[in-house]
Image (cartoon, rainbow, N blue to C red; front, side):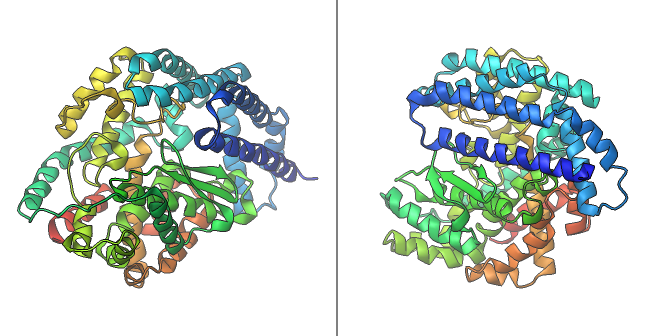
Length: 497
């Protein structure tokens, strides 16, 4: 047996364990009774410790040294070694006790967050979130020492390998300077249009679900390898070849859940399109979270809020809910789905104001990891930031700093990938439509095969073969360029009127 085959077999077993963790996590978020929380937390902590032990197995260093000298390996195998070494280097920075403590703290905090969010009770969450934050600082410091990075960059590296706060600061400062004036210009244009007639509900959850399933199928989701459920916070999770998505329904407004389903379907298509030959290897994993977010935002924002898609989908919406009148016209639906209006909730934000939500969270989590701001001051800092960036007054913490699960679940360093993903989505969709002229006409017929085919060839099927910059450059001809995103916004909101 070669050193490479030993490594591949070992990481295949790690993938199997990770798949089990993924399904248990999905169950915790979707179906688990509250009374099982403590027992589940113990089980999850043990599995995380077992996985950590396998990833930090002492033999891996020897296997890597020998495998990296093997001249017979191909490009995929060499890339797999690169990814294994990156993972091993990061994981060996963490003692098992810290991994276990973090897993337990996250499980407890996630469960408490659900109640705290419902009750708008930040004070009740504070001790639980304080423990998670304390452990995330320790994790960031430990990884940073091993990687030669500041603590925040080390946490960011888990979601966006190779990126840094300095690079993100430049991109986000550019957006923060552009968006306020652009938003005012768009809202001025919108104010001159006739008012939209309201869509009259109620919209039963089961009918919303059926419509969501119909459109998931149009996008190309494989129901033999996934399912749609309900959760407090929409997400895509599960395991290899078992890619599950969730949403939440509002029976007074079907439009939010529907776009949420299409967003998560974009994530799921990426997972379902990863290279089967390397599915249980690090090289077969998705290439970082900005690319993952680009896939969800490409489907939701670039494709499914286009006039072409809404010309196809509006008759389906109208038929599902027996709608009639001008409010159910496809042009009215396009105006509804492209309406810009600053609000409190990130997941409901329009395409123009969404980056402000991310910039705020990014700046706050950087300050918290650096211990530059006490966690108890988070609600006040959040509300001040929302007023400054979006001009809205947050009425309570449920609509403010308690709305997202990311920090309670240990996802520190994740938030910036959303807006990096939006910029990446614009660049990929632009390149795809230039390369394949049939994409937009296909979307207008509900045929996503040309678009998904291009994504399979250029993104999904590449896994982690290339770095993020190399993947984007190969697919679009250039590294990430915010000007493409800005051009898309100008075209959609100021020219296509």
